[in-house]
Image (cartoon, rainbow, N blue to C red; front, side, top):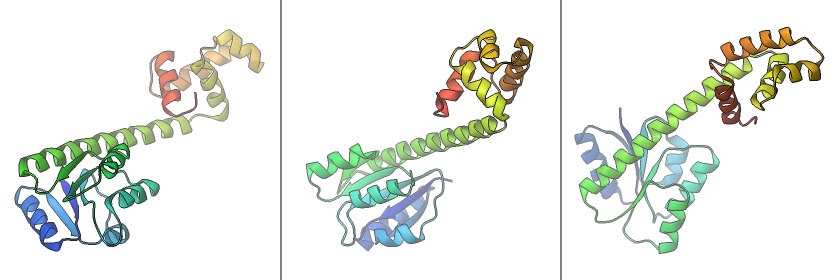
Length: 200
């Protein structure tokens, strides 16, 4: 499924875009009010938002900021009849995929939509891997987490054993279990995993 949210206060443009996308094999939801979108839309993936800049209740960049604040990362393609250069710069700085000026070429729109969908797929895959990595780390015992942190910092087993007041043989057992639970085969990979978790 490739989903597109169309948000444009011009209902004719929004409906036409939605129908065109549906005909081309996408699924679409059309909203004429960004506040209604915020209240009613359900996040799906992969998806992209086609967002108008000029709307009565809220500007496109304001909605972009609101979505960021609530942690919704669906990629955004702006479509606008008129925009200040400062708005375009702000939209791109806040992570917009593209900014198309109306009237735009359908091929350009579809290219931007596909780029947005690819970005969403990558974000979803990264988030899934992060959750899996966190679950693996959470499976470690408190002592294993302690040893894991020191191993990731490059400490040798003998130094860890001396610092924690336990035998070198015990540290080796911990090390083997940590590598197995974290599903890595080297201390370099372990260090990268710990860094990815923000624990370095």
